[in-house]
Length: 205
Image (cartoon, rainbow, N blue to C red):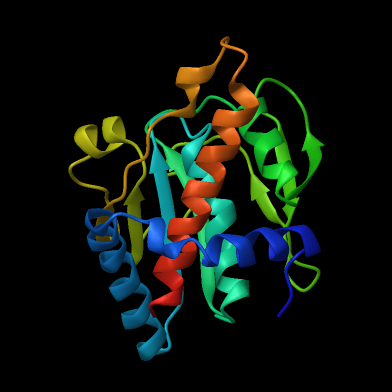
């Protein structure tokens, strides 16, 4: 399977940086690895819902990289989702940072919460990306891993209905850079950090 050329290039770069991932982070990532391995060995769909508070930044970044990592390592039956404890809209800075890494966005509906098709591989159907609550009908309702990518969601959702596994994997919010003039740098750093760690989790399967 192939990724978009630019994503493939970035992914190969991030793979060379696995040794920069702190050991305590690798412990969290090992839980995700174990879930993926268990489902893969059982031959059942690997459904992963990345959850943040507003489903606007980190959860979308993780969803995109989750889909890309599956292609990079040749896993056929991975389904990557995202959701929040509330719905807002995909953040423009997050969208731009993902675009700069090769994820291609096509707006398919407008309004205050636009829907996008996100192309990441010429061999896969695009992801349909928009802000939504984690229980939205577009997401799985049973037998999925809930990966909590922000501390607020982790603290406020001790139980995620339908999840067969709940995994803590929190990241600092790039929102802290909004209005500082450092948005491009900070958002790209977060996109690469999340990509690096999700690629690592898949690599260990």
